[in-house]
Amino acid sequence: MNGEFVHTAREATVTILTIDRQSALNALNARVLQELLAGVREFEADPEARVMIITGAGEKAFVAGADIAAMSKMSVREGREFANLGQSVFSAIENTPKPVIAAINGYALGGGCELAMACDIRIASEKAKIGQPEVNLGIIPGFGGTQRLPRLVGRGKAKELIFSAVALDAASAEKIGLVDAVVPADQLLAKVRELAALIASKGPVAVSLAKAAINRGLDVDLQSGLAYEAAVFGECFSTEDQREGMEAFLSKKKAEFKGK
Ligand code: DAK
Image 1 (cartoon, rainbow, N blue to C red):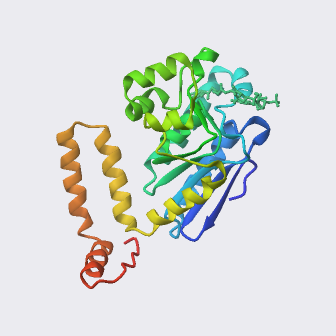
Image 2: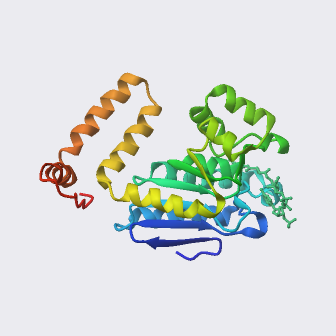
């Protein structure tokens, strides 16, 4: 798609979605959120696309948050609509059956940090700055920050970051598990493309089922999570990919997965 603020491009089996609203450091207004949702739906429906990368245009920002200027003028009804839209976008990313990687090229603040946390994996440029500064504005994180941040970094660190509004540099974010890897700024997209291509070469159904099992497991107790894992493991044996993967191993060939 080629929207006003969101562009997607597919390179072989990887879709790259770029948020491009550089005059406001790629801040999320309703239009950006609508286009982001359309981009996720397009990725989901594209049978050739196996992995999506989300990044921000320009050198400076991934996403500097929800659009403060737009929010400052919202009525109660508009605020509610904005919240519903934002939540549906973030849930769509989290629940899309295929993996999504955030390539964090600069500021990921507030809604930008929350967007990155809704992705499956976060790779940051060494220039990235990540945090939840909402209390500076007299609000709390509203796109899942109070829920996803403690799940990623533990409750103490999450409270420290949200209460203090301090943004972390990339190295500190990696240390606490808020990002999964840090790479030089000029290599960010190349490294993320490499990881995306590696994931895209694996059994797509298995990757998708693993995503579902991990996400579901984190929301339930261990016993329920293990029961879900066993059920999903069983499901793998109804797929062509499982037969292909195991037969290829046994005959010492490279598996050609079809995603079925
Ligand atoms: N919104 C709108 N415009 C923004 C913006 C933002 N979040 N961040 C930056 N900009 C704009 C600036 O206003 C400026 O515009 P002009 O003055 O040029 O017109 C332009 O981008 C460049 O920014 P700066 O001049 O400030 O650039 P600096 O390098 O000096 O500073 C900065 C970069 C990222 C440190 C600074 O811009 C900054 O502190 N930005 C705000 C970061 C922030 O507080 N982010 C959190 C936003 S609150 C909700 C759910 C979730 C949310 C809300 C509601 N519901 C459920 C309803 C989420 C809230 C948030 O994310």
